[in-house]
Image 1: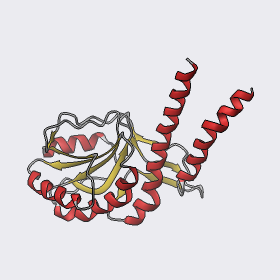
Image 2: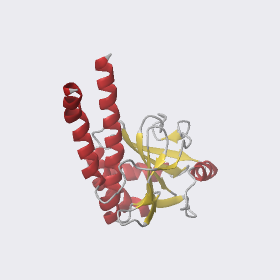
Image 3: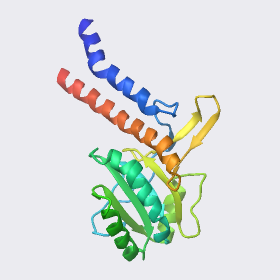
Image 4: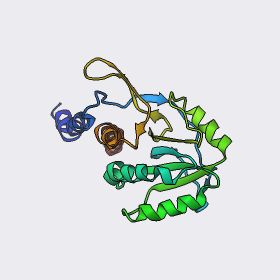
Length: 218
């Protein structure tokens, strides 16, 4: 019995405390699933011809559209508020989807982002307009892509390719639903998305602890 109490204090209690504080304004201890098992994109084109997969990665997913220059400010917001805080987590990645034909614009964008610092974990993926539309429809979202196949929103996808967000009630008991995070609004990234990404990472840290403890017992 004493051994179980010691294990609880050493491993479980700190993680529960972390989840509590990580949740911030979010009333969820586990971030709800919005859409289960979305398709992978490991056969899509990339700048370096290396496949990019969503499976077994915690992904921030974005749809940029053909007007890459217009979205540049959103990239900087995302880099500073989300990427810099999580880039050291080895299974964390940023995946930005563009219509085929925007490769030269994206190369220029990469040069601009490089001025902010490292781009490790940033992935730029290209698909035909129909590919992008079909893939986006599979996300089963309320929001829609604009006529240029873009949206200011980005989405959190877990390692099992489940799209995660807020669904239920907030702390005041009011209905709350959030499927994506508006990269134009720094306040939304800071007050909501940072908290929600922390929760996802905390889930996996807790899972790693459990697996480690289980293997030690064996």
